[in-house]
Length: 374
Image 1 (cartoon, rainbow, N blue to C red):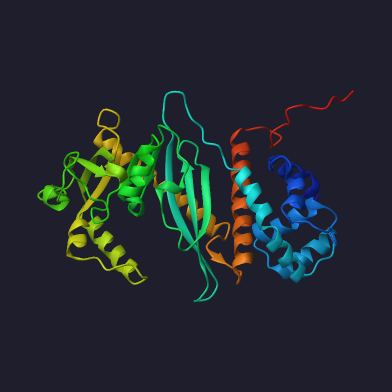
Image 2 (tube, rainbow, N blue to C red; image 1 turned 90 degrees about the horizontal axis):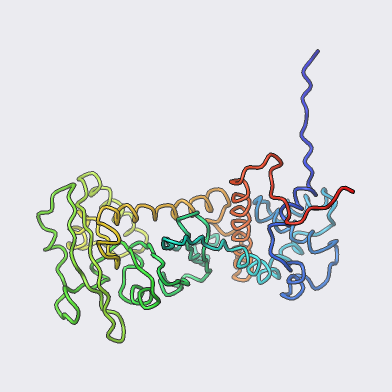
């Protein structure tokens, strides 16, 4: 007997009901309140509108292809232009749902939250297209999004932008190596661990000192493979001083050459060329932290900084898998709506991934109350 090839029939409505369970409460009412739905001309209901938008945003279909799929699925008949207008009107609604789906960070009873922060740019098509910046904060305990914000290109990388609780440990790269951001975190009761850029973050030997530490001179003669720790104070605003320490390690020759190549590459795309001092500093990796040695030894400081790379992988997944890297829109209004929708897709993927971690043979979480068969 010949083997029959069986085609799996997807229960689209059943799968959609599982997605609906992940959405925040009141999302249908918010569609009307926030202006995403004024008239349902050509669309059955709010669910159908969201499904159409997710086909365009999540599957990467063009507006024309999405309109064709909508008609073939029997959801309604809509033109590509009307779908574009629907997406633009849904910006506030998509943003609200994304904000509601933020993964609330897990916090243990005996340990602090460890949050990695960074930003990535998203460009519109064309050489003169607008540039947008997505600011992201990830809880390293579960790799869930703790905060995000969308700004234009003028929205700088600031630690003050992120909500911080007392005891939180914030990990950042060199873009956050400045006294203003460190002062903002420490004055809210948080701790900081950032990649040090001595040119943007002045350091002092003691409180009230006026002479800056010459970091390069302090590290001269440091051999490869050894660590050196320096007590270094940061001067914040309004006379606030914050005690910390620099943990330094010398790079290998190969790692130094790789760092110099990266800086030359960055200089081609608008960044300032590395001067003589910056090239000399490329031989070292420097981290400044406000945590004391008793709380976090030097080797663990460097290990914690390595964990920050998990956020870079989040950006890579969003850009390569979900297509967040290049905007297909040409106006600011449609670009904001498209970005808000992409972030909503990312949040839904996180929620589905959370459910997949808790293994169950039926493949999804059960509601809190089950219906009786009787």
